[in-house]
Image 1 (cartoon, rainbow, N blue to C red):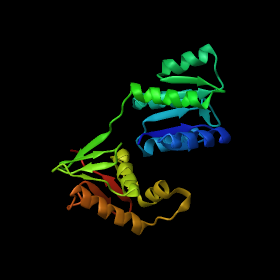
Image 2: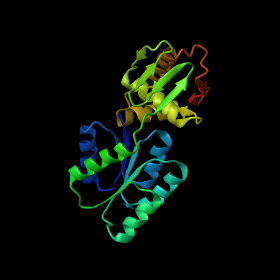
Image 3: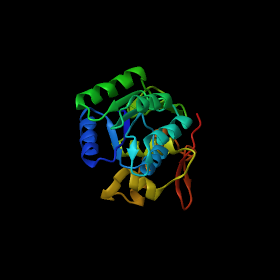
Image 4: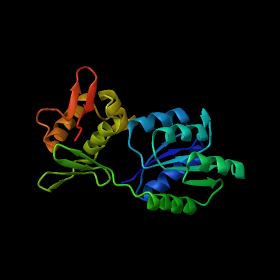
Length: 222
């Protein structure tokens, strides 16, 4: 499942786009500010950034420049700033698409699909003879057997991989995986780590490392 980060400060439009994109089969996280977007970008792996230009705490152009300086993440602008100069600035930064507001929802969906046709993504990580396919959310064992951990367990695995080499605290794991619900607790997190280590053949805890008093760290290099 492809992951989209949507940065839009218009709550009505943001909620509509989040729901519609999710119906198309995308995993969507919606935030309203530049700072919140930077936090989410540092916490996870993303396949597309859909970005408004006029944000309450800065310019979407500035955010896009910061992103492009560190990664090749595809960017799509959606903005009321639709002059030729604005479009040129967006494309010079490296945007894949620039959609002036107002736009037809179907057009945005088609353009998202077009971006992924141009940039097919198959994200995978190798670890201890296993292959972790992030898009299919599968762990392939050395003998070829395919294992599908529970959704939230895999969310935790993906969070650790995308955050490496940074240590992820238990509280951050709870906040990211359960959000406002706060249904998870530190014991739940520890049990999920046990299950993931079993799936990875990580009997010596070399690949998912516990950092005393802090949390967990992904440490598998190959």
